[in-house]
Length: 635
Image (cartoon, rainbow, N blue to C red; front, side):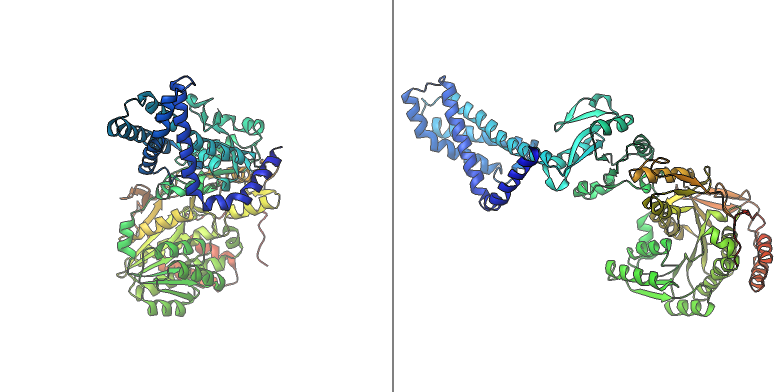
């Protein structure tokens, strides 16, 4: 039956819709005049109990044009020819009341005062105003109700359970009921506020609390869950996700409060909940005014521009209108794609794509000498722990010698600031990758003493969604139906979003005076197993039921948890509440760095990789290699 009615309404709309729209203004005026006429007739009938005397019938007919003209003027003054009836709200109803008051007042002035028709009943004037308001409001509400009813009849509309019965939830319900483009049917609202329980918002009931999500999705036959709490804390989002863990339904969210304030139309941009929404801390904020001073009109160079961090650095730097943006990358396709993207988004920025390997001294010297950058962000590095365990020579060549090559070329070119992107794996390293990044940190600190260039280091944890990170891997494994592989049930990592990481790098470049190691306060470490479970739930599946989680064992160089500071480092605050400074308590022990560099460079030329590992341990005394019996040597 519902499908039949939907088909009938759709056919009528297609047949007569265009004609109605073309003559909408005339139809609106005509309908409203008929309603006012009806109100006036009903007023006389009510006044005389359904039997209007001939004398009053005659004066009613004579005065009818005047009454209609008075109300037409009221409708025009209050703008009641412009609103769309399907979106009628409190504001429209108040205008209808004022139009009725205006029409009653004018008709009384014309009939009683202007024409002195004192026999015209005053009660009829009042009743006409009241009935006109009721009828004008009623027809609008009827149109809105009819459209919402047709929307509910739609067999293709997805039944949604909305979490949050506040202002955002009310707006979302209103949009869904009034706009057919949504293709959603709200079947219930959820809120922990007991006062709202069993209440209704636009006819949709508040059916329970967050802890009831699993049961309610089944009883209401919901197809999706939408979180309509733009200001929800990460803890609340985690709680909602946990409550929905067994529902097998997609979970979506509204844009953030900031996005809604900037663009109210963003209310329509419902998107799937992501891991970024579940980070257990608030995002880092930076002083954009300071960054304008630092970057606007400056020449900036970024190495590793085709990588996740490097590319986002280039995007954010381009927003500040640098005089020149140099993209250094050895991977041709990545550089080509980024170059096209930036030229399209920032046509006024002068962009120079430079193919080059950071380990090639002549090429780096050539690029820096030709472009003469004032700021250099060194993001190029080998970052994958297991790969570097079986390729230690390349790790040292790229992460250590490559850093030295770019840094020395930057100093020779007169670069003002040089920022190295480092990692929390450089703290008490257990992997080749971590040890090489630790050497790079100390190298940069030592170079800061030798010239005018200000060298700084930025150290942070894992980046969600970056190339080669666990998130794309888990996502692909879920897409294939599992299993999802986690190395250890207790392994933990610090996580941050790519924009957060880049904001930290840019802010550090403002704060650095040379020689510092800046570290982001990244909150608590997150279990990788919990990350995998959250991704499975966000995909509308149940962990260990639809998708298995398999623990494969720690890999070589991999430890259970990461650290941000070594015991020899003191933690000092900075002007930014989320950025800290690591300072060695025993002073900068960097005198032996040049000797270590020579030994590492010599070890690369030898066939014995064990010698290279020993040289790394000599350069980084805190480096304690962790070997896994399953690790395969490079053959």
